[in-house]
Amino acid sequence: MKKTLFNIIAGATCLLLVSCGAEKAKNLTEKRPVFASVLTADKQDKATALKSKINRPIKIAVLGLENNPFWIPVKGGTLKAAETLKKFNCQVDWIVPAGDSHGASVFGKGIENAVVQGYDAIATVAGDSGITNFINRAVDSGVPVATFNSETEKENKRLFFVGADLYKQGEVAGAEMHKLLKGSGEVAVITGFFSVEAHELRRKGFLDKLKKLAPKVKIVSEVENKDQANLAYRQTKDFLTAHPNLSAIYVTAGGPFGAAKAIEESGKAGVVKIISYDFVDETMAYVKKGVISGTIGQDPHAQGYDPAIRLYNYLAAGVVPKAGKLLTNSDFVTKDNIDKYWSKK
Image (cartoon, rainbow, N blue to C red; front, side):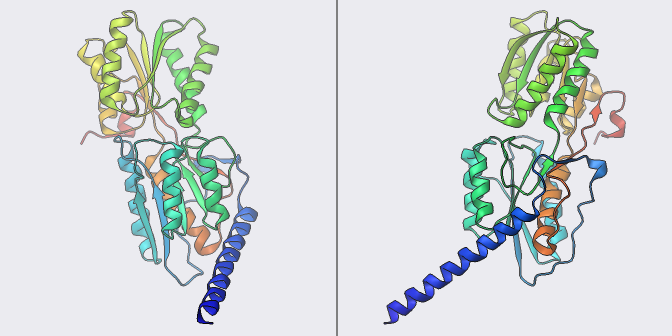
């Protein structure tokens, strides 16, 4: 009899939890902005924590990487959000899933673990379309998910994305490369991962724009450096040997300062141009010296801070962003304007 009663109670509890999860998922579906809708940084409401309507602790997981210096300010943004939300009884945890990859094999497991551990919301990198099923399952269980930095183009149930317009960034890089080369030359491409959609958007945007503006420019090599500066260094040395007339290098992701070091050591600074991404100190030092011709930012602090704050606002007050894609600033920095963005420490 006791066992039967226990089973009845357990079953009723399970049904209640499923029902609650279904209700949360329904609310998410009803409130979620259109997946492809866009707001530029200057059109967005500021990410400011709102007063909570619920009287219980909230836990938010932010799943990121630490495989190169770019992630230092992203993590810093998340820790700042944690500090801000602590007084609202909200815990924000920066979590690096096991494995050195942006892909679903790593971050999918991270999402699953966060759901099992009872997090109320999750912000995650979304490196490839394989992440879609993991996001959708989390949302269907009543856990809202936001993406940041890397976004798959495959539509899913994420609440919003915070990051750059990556294809447009690639187009900007292509246009700037055209100006540097004046319509001709040989270019090598170092991407982070061919399997990461974010890096592919930057690579394709660059190639498409360069082909349109400067069809005589020849792409002599395309390699991946897995976001590692030491690998970019060795690859650049190989480029210089294999292509003595090399005009420029385009680096889509992490570790461009490795390529810059190789160019400087080879006495090719200013001769072989480099266009890259991010405002990390190592990269900006080479921009300041003119070894890197230009680098494009993407506001990493906002990528770490804003998703946590906006997820909290949804949980605490039912407030969602007005668009599915919240774009960060993408300033192009050269030796001429670097003092506006970076000061040597």
